Image (cartoon, rainbow, N blue to C red; front, side):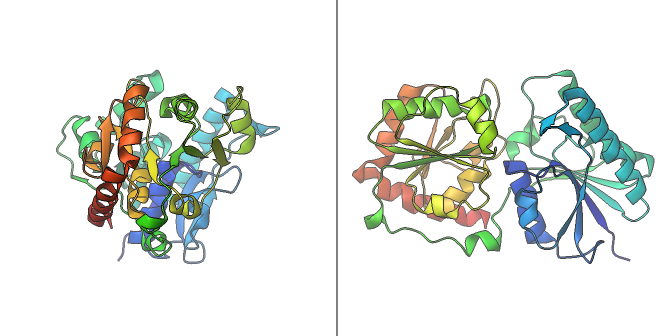
Length: 348
């Protein structure tokens, strides 16, 4: 008898962990399990939009997450959402054999899985730097739960204690549906002035540094694709945005923007957050786009310094500025593009 898998994810949105889950389901799972032959994912799905929404073979079981006038009730919403996830996990424990926990956040499903002796698979995307009480609890749950562990990079694997549990390092890969839409712009048609960054709406991702770089380098066009909606974005950016900056909100189709881009930036501030992998870097590489990324964490497993981009101290804007100019220079750009296209073959 084939074992049935139930997926748990914190929130259906446009962030990297949701995209990675959607890509993995598309690559490795066919329509099955429940709900008209579809895979079931238990997640918060407030707006009904996110990378999971684009998968025809996925049924989303929504977690109730109370809101008033579109705003979360911080502690109350958190508690109710977690309680509802736990109750769903208990109810569905009679129909599923495996609980697949995407990121370490959906701990109520882990508790239910242990109570009902389900096989638990942890897909681990993160390693926290700021150890709040919640972060300490989530990591304690992970470290003390018998589970099969999937790490998104060697960096993440090395940040957790070794256990006797089965584990593997499994890099995120691009699904066929993504690759079929890739149209690579010939070098002769690239203006080498369009710089892109795909990011969550948070200071730790270096968004403000991205805006500052645009001010320093007015000769380039800067495009910021955010996972947040327009209302959240407008509240975040209180100061005027430079004229050479364009901001796109909550966009699931990144292809038109990558096709017109010449260079990718990942400016996540290592002192606040270390990137565990960097799926947006991989997507850019598929278009032959070099990347400038932090010199710590998962990105260094994707970008070889001086080969298909640069690994630098991204908090130092003078260095980033220098590498932007160096990347887009005629004498260097063709080599970086060629090498990006060569290296992406390792992840498809």
